[in-house]
Image 1 (cartoon, helix red, strand yellow):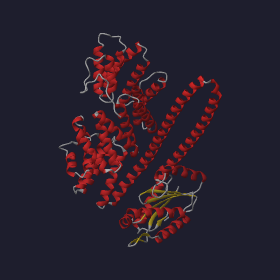
Image 2: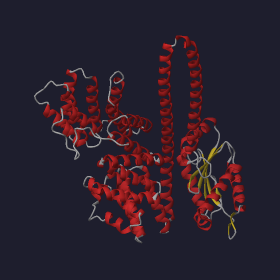
Image 3: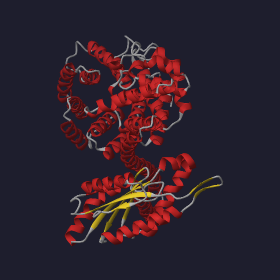
Image 4: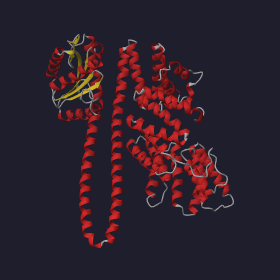
Length: 620
């Protein structure tokens, strides 16, 4: 997308002193999301030009531009002063659109004060009152974008995404590229936070190209580091390293200090490019003190430091860095996204395995798996909303096109009265066809939603339920068993020596062991039992209405069958695989799911300690 600035702007970005106040304000609106300080300066220049006309209707617009600029650059007190002057001018001229924009500034001020619920309530009142008011595309962009950001901080992810998509639609109608770049950046960042990295990548790439083409270097800096983070999250080392060249070629145009605030991503990009020494320079406290790093990047900073230490042959120091960060983060609320912590935990798992600490590795892996399952659910939901919005947008576009065609046909009908009945009949058939198509699309959307829900509660490797499903359903199953006075048991199973299995067969062979063991569970257990992959090589069974002895007998039979299985081929055949299991019974070993899992887990570890390949029952 190419855009040109209004004629009142000179090539170096300074405003033309001969421009009229109206031209200055037109340029200020153009600059709102390209150069916010420049927009404020143009608003003040317009006020100076109107100094001898205290009742001029453009004074309200000029004060608003200054207020919005000051608010976005952190000068809240002066922003409110100019907003009050703008409100007085708009009220004097019955400017309903201007008064709504003053309310918008008030909502943004509530947001920056941390009064998010009050800010959202005002955003919604603005939206409700704007139906009969003619508003500019930039007004609509500010409205939808601000509301989305407030909802993001309130954790209202579904509404947030829909508001950001509305903001993107409004931004595309703006003359300036600034709102479009900003909308793509915000929407891409939201999909990144929700681990929907495929959609985030597309949006961030568009934002970066638009920002570079428009010379919006502040937005370019945000976009280039967002995209580097996305590529890193997707494991795309080449594209991540390529971001270094984009940064180097445009560094003189970016604001001072922006690279230092993104030290972790600079270091990670150098590591992706194979430049270990370059990464070390960015991680040198003498060059970039840790306190200058953006707080939202501290976890990535720890991962970058640890990765650098691993690359330079210091794994123990790397583990100390990871351990120190995890300990510090445990007692503080960092603004970093969950996926950054998940990736650090995966690195901690690999370090602990390499350093011979399997217990710590398992602990880190479990925590990483828990975060992964949370992110998978969010990602699936975000992907569904993105698909739904795209579908609704396509329908709206089709409806708009059909409405235009219908209007043209109606004009023809008015000129040709003789064909009116035929035209009406044709439109009735068209309406029926559209209704049928709409019903079909709704059915497809509902089927897609059900498919996404099923994916969110299933382990993709084994097809068993995942931990999220177990957490959601266990309480209800236990309560039902207690009301019906029936028994219920929790079984925790861990495949013995699974790391050795992976070492012997490779990870693909290890995955095959997990899949076939899951098949054995489905074969031996009842359809009413809940079978769950708890994480790694651990499985949890929730079995109701079954006596302890028959359950133990079934598990012993499964153990014999598992021993008899053969895995691998050729010289790498694995036989005599076993598992260890612990059983806990409701109201005997615990009264809720968490306590039952703890008891079953302890008994499973007793089975491990006693030589593995055995089942320890509740009455053992």
